[in-house]
Image 1 (cartoon, rainbow, N blue to C red):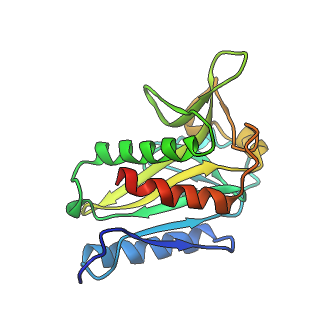
Image 2: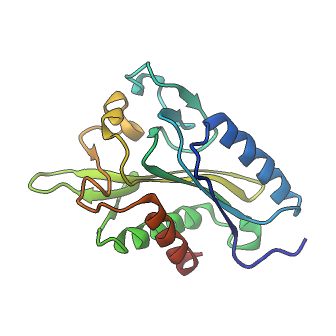
Image 3: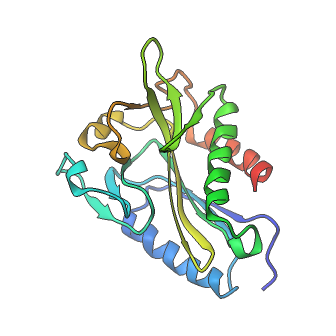
Length: 211
């Protein structure tokens, strides 16, 4: 099938279970691999849960009361929940740039540009995946966005998670991404009282500047 130059966007208003998301992604990725579907960006929220990437250590999950899912994405342990914008990115790199490292950097650039739309200057840190905001009046950083990807036959899935206004206390139940000595923040905690809808608009605006 002939593909549009820009991916389709799907915005889920209802909270989506993690198992349903995995099933949907698996189906869409297989269709993309066959050339039978358009690329897709899927913006959603999950109920409160933890996910473990391929490098995760089970002992990094301290809170045993929330569901925890092992998944095929890269990375370690992270939290998903209401108030966090998750975007699952299903792109065909064989039609773009067949370079996974460049793809991850493009995701980072996309989030950085999106945060700038709200006046937030985040940054990369050597040896740490995700995007970070320096702590005020102290050393260290707070993580504001996580990245975890998987690529199969040059089709991407999983993606990014940007903290808009989640309950940050749930991060106390894990060692986020296996990293100690740093914290976690959100747009609301930084004083940016924006909505998921406004964040979606910014993500759509900045996506084509990077991809």
